[in-house]
Length: 219
Image 1 (tube, one colour):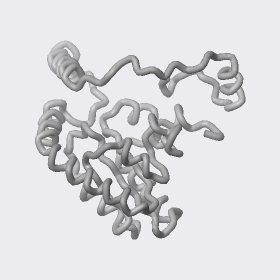
Image 2 (cartoon, rainbow, N blue to C red):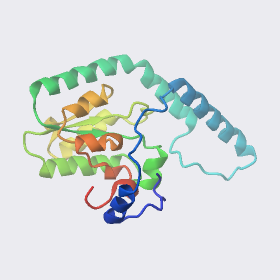
Image 3 (tube, helix red, strand yellow):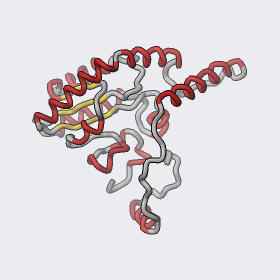
């Protein structure tokens, strides 16, 4: 389903459609294959670059040049074991402490669904909004964990950005940032989170990702 879907916006109409539909088949049909994704991504961008000769005025929705993204992603992957161990240690400490915490899993700024179907032009805007809301409304003992998207190219210093936004909101000691770790494990102990695919089990509010898809009354 995309943001241009003709699915009714009225919750009652959606429930009426669901009443006549068969039970959903949630059995896994496909698995992720990073190698296959990487090959097709490189092929796509190679075709885009070569096609510039024929279409010199074409403008991509991407923020950065693909070569810059690949270099940044490669550097992040080389450092992944170190970041993963640190993130796992932070998650273990959170679960052991039994404190209440919220989770905001980030999305890549170049992700088409974010740029086309959400009200945000980048990730800075929802970070400021969520951290600001957390500062105003969350109980004083709660914590917020921001988790970087696994394939973010790392062209922004998100650690510093999150730290600065939290400091400006007066919650620097209550907001943490991790690059890696098991999202399922992190969400399992969370009070709430923002991963759209996990929203049914973790009381999340994924409207920052795509208001057209998730912004229904009563959801």
